[in-house]
Length: 522
Image (cartoon, rainbow, N blue to C red; front, side, top):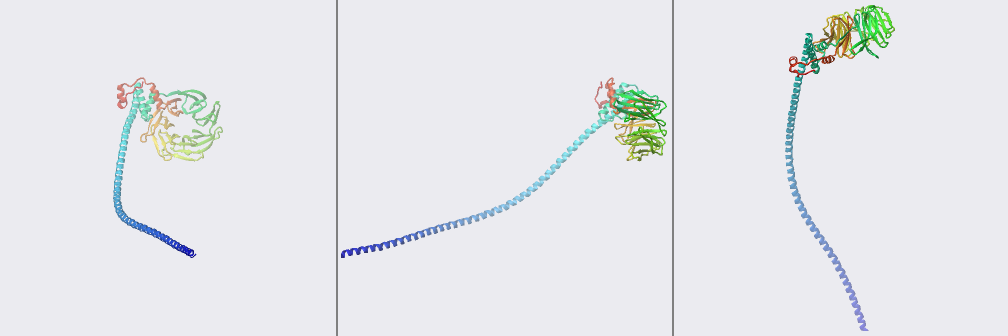
């Protein structure tokens, strides 16, 4: 029992010892575990410290390196900055040099441009001089040919006068040809006179027993007609067919009448004739006649304006009446003897023995147009194209007047009273008791000359120009009615048809020479 007790006690002791040892072992294990943890912590801290130290060292090294790099970069930057400064200086120098070179280039360009412009100007000037030389040569040749044309015209008239008509025909046609081709004036006297003389295109009819005092050309549905009136009381209507006349109406043939002026009243289909010394005769197409005695004697002229008839008398009175009413009233009493009477549109115009020209408008206002030439006036006309007043005087003088400026030209050629003035195609034609119809060339300011269009042996009282402008009808003292060409082109064409041979070489060399190459006309 005691052994059991000892054994239990021992066992308990051992258990206690084991328990205490276990506790100690556990405590030691716990301590050891703590020490391990602390060691691990210390090791981790050491590692971290080591790592931190390494990082610090690396950082320090990096910093040192960066600092060195920074110093190096600074040095490089300083070097680059200095280089930049140097480059800036170089760039500035180059820029300045470039500007200088640019200025030089601009100056050189300007100089080159100026030189080019001068060259172009010289070139243009040279071209102008060349053209001027060519034009001068052409002008000289043209003037030479125009002078040749005038010379040939004069020689044509001379040859025609001495009876050498073949040569005269060749010369007159050549005169027209050279002048026309060189755009010269084919109306100039030397050429026109030769064409008119050699073509001999005038026709003459002895139609009236007395002097033809007025002619009127008019149109109607049947064609072109001519009304002629004579001092022997004859009033005829003629049919114009080409260059021929055929009698159409025998209106009046009574020697008790003395017709001085006629009017074709187309509206009322009648003819109004003024008979000297104091009678008006109205004839219609049915040949019905009305005699209207006038209240005054010695009528000078008669004009129709719209539906009114105006008559002027030598003593200075002007009367008017409504057509077919025939109640004449006085519209003006002029203080001087009236010697010429005409119209301009709706106005009437008259001239007196003192040389004054006056105008009466539709409102009844009278205006002095001209009085600088103190000679009796025989006829007047105002051109529709030029609006210039042309005056014919009893001494043969013709004056072209600008009524606004009072400037005028004197045309000397007629030697007897001027009887009629007409315009056609910008040309002026006049007739006179000296037995001539003249065409005036008034373009030349320094020298005004005229051509004789027609020259019978009788006084020419009146003439009219046909609508075409190529022919005129004239009426003379012996009752002859003449048709005369006034177209140089037409006359030249007719002469061309009658050329019977060519120039011989000797004739060409003598009259024309080297100015034109030899030509044949047949």
